[in-house]
Image 1 (cartoon, rainbow over the protein chains, first blue to last red):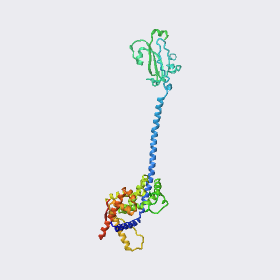
Image 2 (cartoon, chains in turn yellow, blue; image 1 turned 135 degrees about the vertical axis):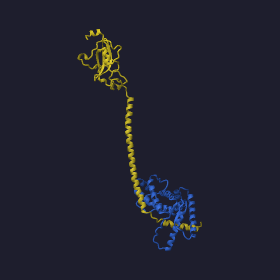
Image 3 (cartoon, rainbow over the protein chains, first blue to last red; image 1 turned 60 degrees about the vertical axis):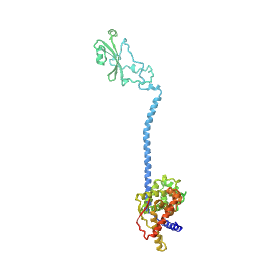
Image 4 (cartoon, rainbow over the protein chains, first blue to last red; image 1 turned 180 degrees about the horizontal axis):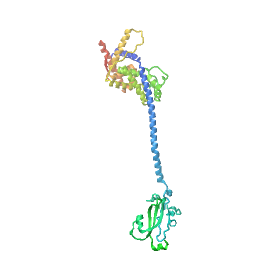
Length: 211
Length: 210
């Protein structure tokens, strides 16, 4: 291109630029842009509020999930780190574990019901606190008794044949004659829970005791 | 950086006119509507002019202008002042939107540009008419240029930006801008020479190669 052509083009472009600078943007464009701004601001505020709500919701969920977990973990830790000494405070800590009570067969059995005829609870068994219970790391569950405080020791004398018929005890010779002293555990409802011992009553001994 | 002084082609100052672009962006990001309105006031004309010359359509230019500032307000937080000036950023957004729009319109656009109302002049009416015809002719020639030359001609020759600024807008080296500008001017000269030999230049559909 020659200098003359360059000059013509520069002049033409300069003239076009001058004319172009007078271009006016319709006011509708500005209105639309500012309206978009307003909408964006409102949407942004709503978005921020929604985000805040979402964060609060997650915090609530986390709190509801963490609190019970923390309590459970604390309880487990407390159980694992607890000193075994407080075991005496357990519900069944008063149950003695030194062994069953034996009633010698050669001694007369005097039931609390002997005087009144009404079965009386054997208080010495469950309420005897003169002897300290043996410390034990185990919790003794008195199976099959569901409620040890409602059990009574009842000693009765019955026919040998009735032992099998009434209490269901297996006998070697269920048809044999004679009496037996039976020591039973009876509940408040009158139902026999267990037979602790059954002792054959000798005729001579029984007569000597005045029975 | 030129961020804290006014753009040479922007409109008249306002109460926020002394505020630099960085502060305006910061205040607009904080939700200040007036700051964003000031940004629009400063740059809407250059964006509109660029889009109009690139597309050859006032309708498209309006759409591009609106979309450019909508893009800005949605990405204010992503704009990094240290990376580019706000005007450069807006030119880049407008360029991408315009190219996308022209591509969508199958590369054919009709020239709808009306000649601006001439200020009252005491010049010879025939001279005014001749200048108007020449401007219309030049617009058509620029619109027919390949887009890589067209955008350089518009930015450098019509908007008065430096090579470095244009290179930043286009994302090309300065040397590429120079060579494209030179080829664009040569293409304009060739076309003008051809038109001088043709008696009539029919108006109508003009092909814009994007």
